[in-house]
Length: 295
Ligand code: R5P
Image (tube, rainbow, N blue to C red; front, side, top):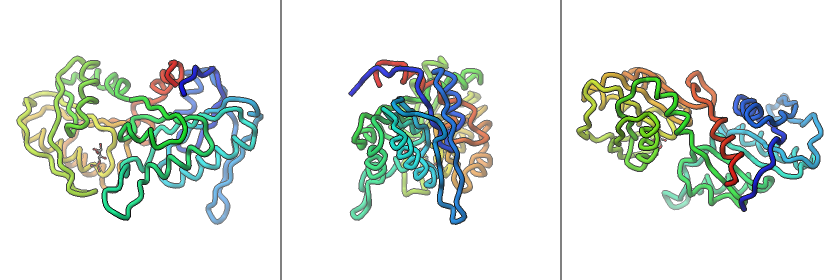
């Protein structure tokens, strides 16, 4: 159910999303609650909320990647409930497991749904950023909302004299189109076929990229395979500069090496997952959603 949230609120930051929490606290003039956390000798996590949040509306902010951050989120939700929070909004900048959003083969779980069900147990609503597919929001048993980083990424790319924004596949072309409107340039898409989790094929498509500065925009960079193949294709077709950008930079395994070796000029991601490439802040898009009457 949509209600108008009363801001300022109380913000509890998980360890995966500290910069987002600090920025959101600043943007919404909300209070950042002090917490304590440590690991037991066997690596189990201990957390504690150090201030009074009883009868308050609390925002818990935590990306659910890698796995250990999922447990931290559950503990924070439980601690907030135990401490008497009146209302809990869970903000998940990067919602992990979203790519297993269906049973591709018999015997598999629907991981995104399984995770959403558990997260829903101790929260009144969920907010996430660029979920892999929008229908994932329906997996939550509470109201769930998403916002997109495309505006923030496009504003960063605006400074790079971009002539063309590309989606790595047709399904993501709306994102490229939205970015192109802000940058004021053309947009198009590449033709990608996924063979398996690690192998993809980018089909040749004659794009007009010769001597142009091209930015590719995607939701996730994981193994870097999609981007690396796209970069090579663009280089083959004579692109001048190639920028790769994404909301969620996982950079798994050899991803960085692949991107660099394929000849990309810059890697850009947001801070939904912190890395040296988190050049774009995500908090403004979450603040806009919080201040809107949609949530
Ligand atoms: C796929 O549908 C996603 O939008 C990304 O293109 C994908 O997850 C990227 O994965 P990788 O970096 O492993 O190619």
